Image (cartoon, rainbow, N blue to C red; front, side, top):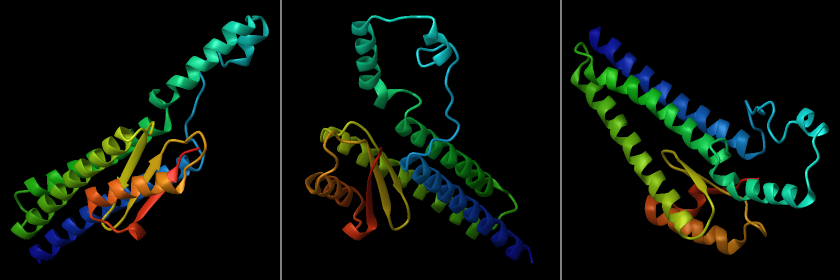
Length: 194
């Protein structure tokens, strides 16, 4: 009876981990499609319409400030890529804490502990592989990207390109992903952020 309970707890933890990964992936798909949840504007900022009514900017100053905002957009803390990385890390941290609790449970049988440790190792491997893919893609000249590795697939979101993504871009990114993950082209999804 105890073995059944321990296995049920381990299965529940694995189910929660899978659920967290799915929710993170689902959220990333929503934000990649242009839906930004929880976006807010700072009152009194340059983008506040109430503050702009009473002030007049010179045309040159306005153009310079807009260019500066466009150049720093990919690295802003509120950008899609920063948000996606943060959400991915938070989901993994939550799952990792559950797995660590299961692995340290004195009442758990060795099978459940081994299963939790294997899941922890898998998460660590996914994290390393995603970081390698992201770094190599940005090293090839792409502004920013974020990768979401699953058991048998990967989704890579790349920042919007000036002329849009070409077949050459997709092939170059696909080659990097294939080399790092061992996945086939059918298992790779490349998305251009808008």
